[in-house]
Figure 1 (cartoon, rainbow, N blue to C red):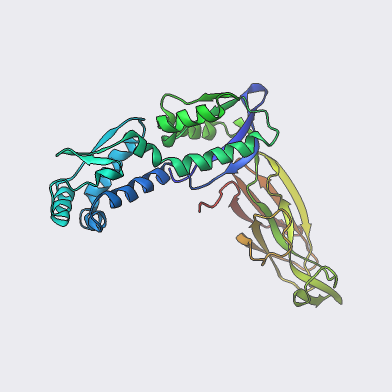
Figure 2: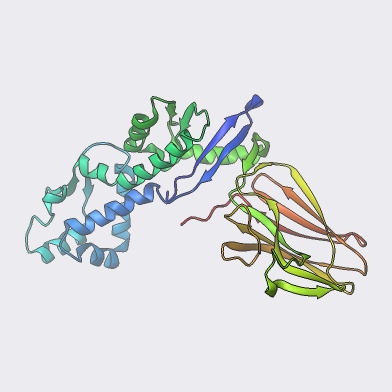
Length: 340
C-alpha cells in the first residue's frame, strides 16, 4: 500500500517470534508506483487532459488505476484500457488521432494505451532505491539474516521480487507466499487467536508521563519552577516508561508510586506522552506528543499507584488511589508509527 513496513524477527523455540529490529514504516510502497504512473499519464497527453478527465470522470479514472494495480504485478510490456471519455478529450485537445506522446515510452493502437516494459520498470525506481537502502542498513547492523519474507499486495510484483532477489539473494533466501496479500489477513487472524506468538516487540517511541522534580537551577528551566510544601519544584518533567527501541514482553507490567505535590491536593492528573528521542527532558518539548491522560481523585495523605501493563500492541495505564482503591485507566497504542 502506501507504506513498506520492514522488521526483523528471530524464531524462538516453539515458533514464537522475538522482534529484533523495530518496524521502519515509510512511504515507499505500491502507492509510490501508482503516483509515478499517474504522473506519466499527465505527461503522455496534451497538458491538462488527464487532470480534466480525472475531475469530470472520477470513477473511470479510478477504474484505470485499479486495472494498473494488476498490471504492475507483471514484468513485461502492458496495455491498459483507455475510457472513451479520455480518448475523446485527448483527441480534441491534441487535434490528432494519435494523441499519445510515443517518445515517452507509450503508444496508442486504437483501443489500448501500450506501455513498454522499461517504462513500467521506471515507475519502481524511487521505491526500490528506498527499500534497498533500508535493507542494507539492516544487513550491516550485525543481525544474521537467513530469510527475507515478502508479504502484502505490493509483494506480488515480479519487479519487486526480482529486485530483492538480485540485491540480497546471495546473502539469504527470498521467499514470497503464493497469495502474498492474503498472508497479511491470515497473520492478523493467527495473531488475534494467539497474541503470545510474538514473545517481544520493540517500541517505536520513548513513552513516559509528566512528573515534578525538586528544582535544580543547573538542570531545570527557571520558568518551570514552583513552590509547594516549602520546597521548590520543577514541573513538566518527562519520566520515562519505555525507551525507543526497547524490547517489550506481551504481558510485562511496571509499577510506580506517585505522590501529590501539595498537601491539600484533591486530584492527580496523570498525562502520558511519546517522543522519537530516547531521552526527552520536558513533556512540552517540540518533539513530544501527548497520548492520553486521566484524573485520579485523592483523599488527604493518599498516594497513587501507577501500573503500566504492556499488551501485545498497547499500553494500559492504571492509576489506583492507595486509600480508597478507586481506579482510572487509559489505553495507548504503542506500536503505531505515524505515516508521513
